[in-house]
Image (cartoon, rainbow, N blue to C red):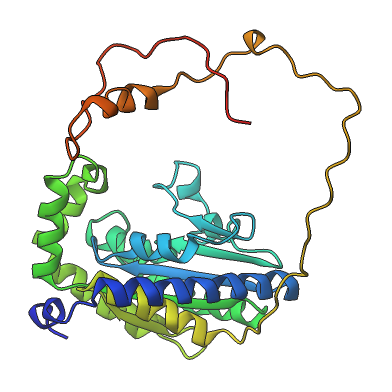
Length: 299
């Protein structure tokens, strides 16, 4: 779907939030099935810079137990890791029984950024394209459920997102000189992706392309597909009930003055609310450090 058409058909927020909540509830059921059945699930998130991989992962993991479902986003390899078999540093992050691993970028770095930016040799790149299907077939043969998603974004939409990040101090950390260079190397990345698909879009572990110019649509489509691709059942946890609190056995709380409490920063925001006209925004907090006076915490 073209970028302009996708933006014109952006999912309304009300529909998006209701469906996202429903899908996230299903992800919780999927997680419990994975835990109870001892399943191993790997989900690979790949795609262009600023295609929305990170925000999709965030929505997938939002209500999951981090002891069951974890996100793996590896930094650049160390000098020692560069001497290892290429897949070795990813193997140690694969799931054990009853676990889900979400790869925020993965071993496919070699077919994309490493190859395009000259961080690997032609021989290393070709070796990866030969070995990757074998590696993934071994995972699937051993019982790992492997799902691979490619988030596709148009060049125009990518540029808009880059510009938005440049002007947003809360998101500037998402940009690096290498990210911006992807604009000038757009076709190089396209050719690298096409070659990667030729070699690694295999029946045992196919690629699933997510149209991502509309982030809301992309998240819903990706999560719905993931749920439909895993044969989970409603494996609910046994119901729990709160026990009755026993009677006190004479414990006395430690005197409050013997402990150091976090200063009540919120009090500096709300102190003048009663004297301000309705609708007036609160005054910004003082630049001085909040009082060190200890406050009784909420029990």
